[in-house]
Length: 452
Image 1 (cartoon, rainbow, N blue to C red):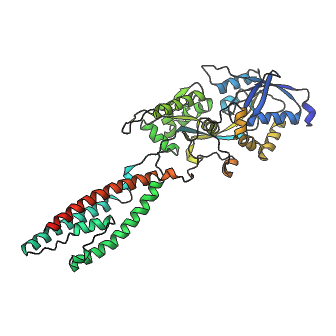
Image 2 (image 1 turned 180 degrees about the vertical axis):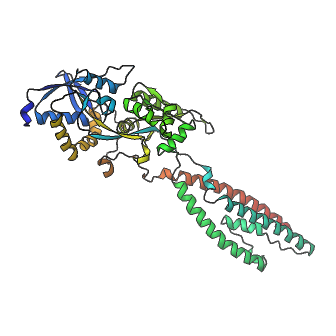
Image 3 (image 1 turned 90 degrees about the vertical axis):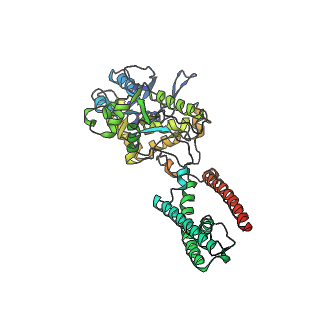
């Protein structure tokens, strides 16, 4: 087919603005809609340039309470009110009974997004480097040393000797790496014990410090990194899954074929539907704002955390718009999504140019043009053109090669910053308090021994 063979065709295209698939604005001068950015928008523009056809854009914003915005686009195509529908619409068997689809251009994942937990200092990390057996063994050693010191003092008192050994105090000083100046006055047997104790303590302290500092340097934050952890949190009443009750979710979670899947059953029993995905995002952001107003350190919040379920492609741009530092999406892994589905452009049945359009879509996809359209949106200049505040859309200009290759993962790696040393400073401050307390005890002990 020649590029000019469709010069007489004029298609009616209905669209729904939703990144990363479409961003179409109204041009007051031309009194028509104008394509700005988006995978499907620019794909249609490429098809129009290649086949030389014209099109008329219609913004589909009417919401049907009994249906969702996705279905409104499909229903317009089904009723032949429009020839082509744009909106990042998923392919389902139910929809294919009424409309046809072009070649799928995105393989998306149905996953979740929730508030990013604030990093907190877990005081259990102080005892975590050792198991309970190790701490219990140290306690028993100090108890035995205390008993030996008590017996030694009784023997020395009966024999009128004034050279207390103080193995308990010496061992405790060495454990905290504190000097003891009276080692020369203790008996030879006690010196041999102190030497062996010092060797053991050096190994224990080195292991403890290495493990503890490496743990405290990275701030702890409870993240649900896969659907199994999400299922456990939902079953425990800690998380509330919400989202738009779209057709692809209905088929997956509420069909009889998925009744035996535990992860799907947890969603089916606790899912709260909203009219649109944007309404679910607003509920999540309101919960984040309300949680920031609570300043009590010891306050326990029993409110369920909201998790928005939707396509990873939509959630990624919702995260960029509302703040990556506030919202969390699990890393792109096989167990971080409930299912995968294909996104395509619906067309009316018996669309005569389907095969020709599919051939060009396949060529553009193989060439990486569609991935370029996706990554092209993530620049400050384009967000300005879309009318979104740069302060609200916190976009990182110097993105790494992984993100440029269409891998929009919430990576677990991050840049090391000075604020990550906060936990180590807390431990250092706690140790200083302990050292002052030990110093006071040592001064009191020295004053008592000086009187003897």
